[in-house]
Length: 209
Ligand SMILES: Cc1cc2nc3c(=O)[nH]c(=O)nc-3n(C[C@H](O)[C@H](O)[C@H](O)COP(=O)(O)O)c2cc1C
Image (cartoon, rainbow, N blue to C red; front, side, top):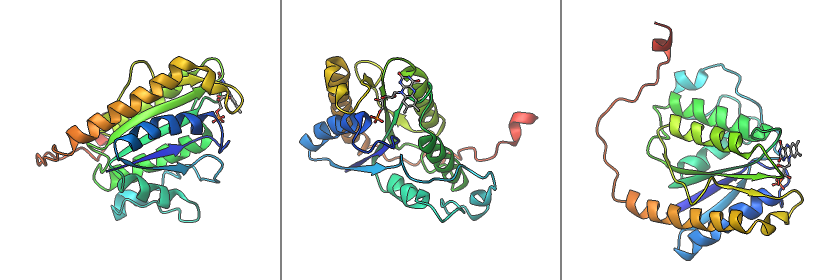
């Protein structure tokens, strides 16, 4: 079993990474393989709305001169993913937004390939605005048919400069708890791969009828 965390912070050794590591350490105690993929700080195009991924159904993005397709492969080869972002003006980082848009559209185009994948959100914040970030990450996963795992509170921790986050004892404990709950869900989920034959909607035209 493998859990991959996507770090949306361009500050590679910052609070978001420290928070991710806290959750991944708990998973490692359960002998679950983990990896951190650095999304922030990469030059990533936003979605170009070309819908080529709906025609090819390959799960790949037509834009092939950035790291997005390698990120998409990492998502699909993982049993669970963690989407982690710092709070930037009450939103996810720009790179995380580009990542979500392109991951979302390519997976719908390929037939809703995120369905039933386990996911969790993690947010770092200096003071306020974490809830909309948490909400954005969770909405992405819930709208993709993913199984979203929570903890004892909303998964956010407070800190400004790298390392400050350790002072937020409740936030760090929350990250530990998330690791435990992800480990539990991975075990439950491993016996639950049932294909109901249900056809998940991949066309949006009904919205306007
Ligand atoms: C461009 C920018 C915008 C930010 N906006 C907010 C904000 O809206 N609210 C807040 O509490 N902190 C804000 N912060 C602070 C970061 O969310 C905080 O320092 C976080 O811990 C950074 O995580 P990192 O160390 O992984 O980069 C902002 C920081 C930057 C660079």
